[in-house]
Image 1 (cartoon, rainbow, N blue to C red):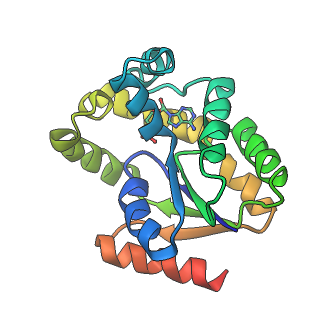
Image 2 (image 1 turned 90 degrees about the vertical axis):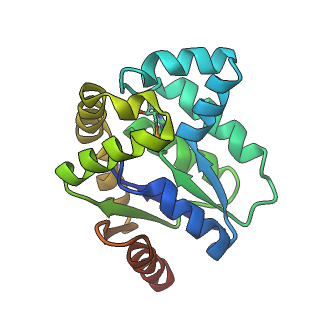
Length: 190
Ligand code: AMP
């Protein structure tokens, strides 16, 4: 199986690049943010809980997120591989993903980390707010908190994969196609 962790701060372009990667590599895309938003839209219990964290730019608790991710993986038992987008975001989630995949006789193949300067992230998120309808994109204080949470809790996850020799840093500034080309190059090199 080819299992890609697509990593980077909010606004780095993970969702945009995932769309292109899905068709190119034939992988199943799991975006934990998308699953939470789907649950919010459908007013499920999970959605109500997730919303209370997402509106503030905080992380949804690990136990809830890990269980949800496990269920999404199980729904796709015939997948030839996955793109994990927005997961793992904590060290506990990274350890849980390793365990989950080991139980299926597979593992994370690589982490592609998109590198984008903070000012550029803020500009992109404010622009995205005009079309995404996402409350967490529209409020500068929430954007700042998401970036701070990323730096404090999520950025260290890259070290976990670096230690396993699986981290590939990719410049996330440029056109969508330029960045896609860089990701493919990193993936095809292995
Ligand atoms: P995203 O769509 O990836 O930008 O995620 C939007 C929001 O969903 C985040 O700010 C978090 O509140 C929540 N979220 C998404 N993925 C995770 C995760 N792996 N762990 C905890 N919270 C998450």
